[in-house]
Amino acid sequence: MSQIRPLQAADIPAVAGLFQRTFRNGSKPPPPALETYLGQRYLDAPVCDPKIASLVHIASDGGVSGFVGVNALPMSHGPRKLLAAICGSLMVEPQANDPMAGARLLRTFLTGPQDISFSETASALSTQMWTRLRGVALPQYSLDWHRVIRPSAFLLDLASKRNGAIRWLAPLTRGIDRHLRGRMQENELRWSGVAENWSGKAGVKATEIDQAGFTALVEPLTRQFPLRPDWSGGQLAHIIAEASQKPDYGEAVFASVSSSSGEPVGAFLYHVSPGRIARVLQILAVPAQAGAVIDCLIGDAARRGAAGLRGRTQPALLEAMLGRRVAFTQPAATVVHSRDKDLVNLFLSSQGFFNGLAGENWGRLAGGRFE
Image (cartoon, rainbow, N blue to C red; front, side, top):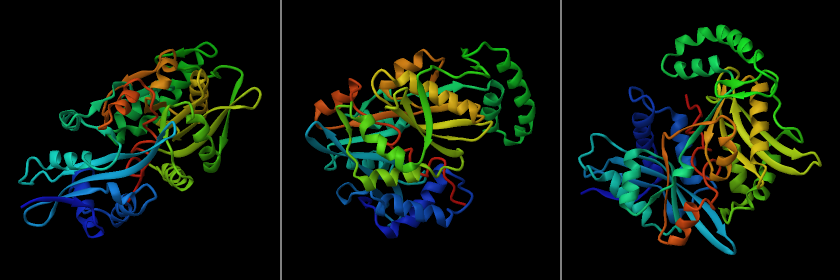
């Protein structure tokens, strides 16, 4: 008879194989580095908590046929200390004889001792399972945003995801983009691109900083959220160190944004490679300064040769994005579940800080290499 139990170290090779078949190249065995990383991420990292462990589905023959990866996120709401659980990779062996394995894994996870459960990468099927179990989808947290900087390079990068061979056109797209952007007026923003001499709003300045400097800015720049992460120093340092290791996305850039008086008003973390669409992991801004911080990010990415920008929304940034020729898509949903309706309502009213560093995509499973 099948069962669900907490993940153990002995399960990691089977989980790595399932991950390889589900999300990577199923014709090859999982690389040893992937096994090592999964063990660290879900058993040994500072973001693990034995009270809300990752789970495996064990088939009647004793083999691992399903897995849900879980990490802990301490949070606070005023003086109240909370424990959130982040639901990462949810996968089931396609040949498993138990068609309800995925639903059973999710139900077991949601009935754990955590105060809040989240996922920021729920597929349409996963979202249906969450809502059937009284979870709630959060539309304002569930959008990916896109900002074109170099239109030809942007289209080439999108097309190269299907056919990498067409990257030989990159020199041609660079010439086209120089011509198109050079004809735009100073500081002009179009849906199709950003002017060659675009500098954004005056009065604020972006400065590249190191990981430690960025880590120090996270708490003061999230203080305005009633419901927010309450990381220990070691937990946040671990997350940001991992977030810097995404070679498939490019070089990690940490930057602070300061007012003319030198006061920090924001920060951002993204990965950039010239000619590619840069991936934004986190934008932080004090109230009323989101637009200025986004302008600094656009300008920094343009100077580094990015084709465009892509990131995940947060409600506090949406209004500023709507005036900056940003397009939105919805590849996955952010979902939340809690037995405390007041906590869910905080997210429905956009008062919670989630996605990015407070989510799943900081890890190396997105943008990392294991070969």
